[in-house]
Image (tube, rainbow, N blue to C red; front, top):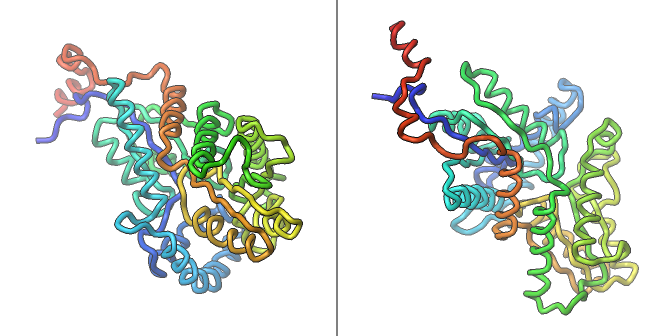
Length: 363
């Protein structure tokens, strides 16, 4: 017999939100994922009836197979999608931190597109007694295309619930000290692993963030400014002079103008201008994915070397860096202040629940 939900100990939950990934590196799986992703009006701000024909008549038939080959090139043996693997690992480590601190906090991961969906994860948390919910996106820099879209989906699900949880949101943490420290640690640990002395960071240190159409900035999206601030803070944390690092934007799609400078042309120009070595890092991606492993670690490397560069060093994303786990915990705790992080005492649970008693009297 199921326990009356009103008699269950109310719990606090932290839900990590990420963009998503195809379930497999196949044309069918990629097509399904891309269709959901590119159908989001937060992502593509083109009149729906026009975009429907472009998406279904041109993009999906052409891009699905090509993208599937790219996904296959970065798929992890036995583990699958890097984004899914590292995102799940981050959720697991955050949950363990709460447990080690003596707290009872539900921690889970949901993807905006694909599986596990926001709806199925929220329903699962509800079944476990969630009464307080913190949404923590794995997007350090806020954008309507990512953060707001993930919030939209959570709001859509919750709008159909009769008994909604208390809700808090983490909008951004692009300048959070713990996040910047984690980025710094990731870069330094890779430099030290490669035997680099003090600076020896290559001729340039490139920080590549995911791009957005320029019109998003002009409409008020703060993403561009937040990326620049993250870049500046990380440069300072690494004791780099402004001329030693460059902030660029990748993954441009279509003919419209996007945020500049573009990553690929910048890397090519550096090589042509005599830059022999670059170190490149993607601070806006907490977990490695197609955009970092294939586009930056593979395609950009090839381009740099073909244009005359000699040494191209890709620094992996935060992934399982313990400083990143600490940063996530720090960010979560900041937004959980005032909420109970454990179940009630046995004495509290033994007290009659007024709502439950009323419901019972009416049956």
